[in-house]
Length: 163
Image 1 (cartoon, rainbow, N blue to C red):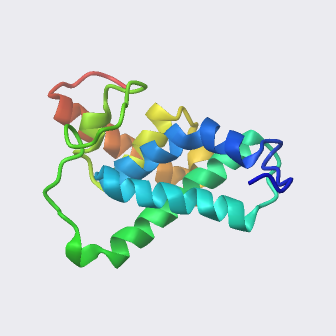
Image 2 (cartoon, rainbow, N blue to C red):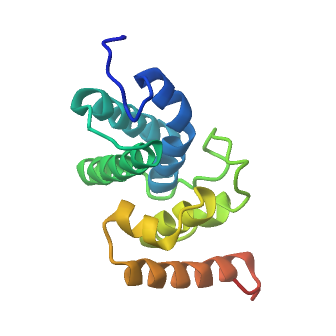
């Protein structure tokens, strides 16, 4: 599949290898179901291939992929709302290695509006300003979501540790 396309200096195959874990993590956190996450993963990289966006850097590529993955998951949930299994937890049922973050089980217990911000901040190590750009939200909104999300995580962990 080598047609000379380049994505921020990477071949398509290099981009998939480099950002597969990131896109998978976003999809699993949003959908809480590995099979559904696989579909959105494939759609995300299919859009990279077909749209071939002009991307300035690898960071821009990563942010683009995260944004597309989030939109793919939202579209998937909207289309499959009636058939979704709402009680499926994402902990043990998901065969995905979250070793980058031992908080994945707690993130799964938070509402989706906090989960994206918390995941990008703690697992992907993005700064508030970068998260605002990726999620296309105001920085203050991201700060509020992060603050409330941290409070939820503290209650899930059962402690009152400081940020």
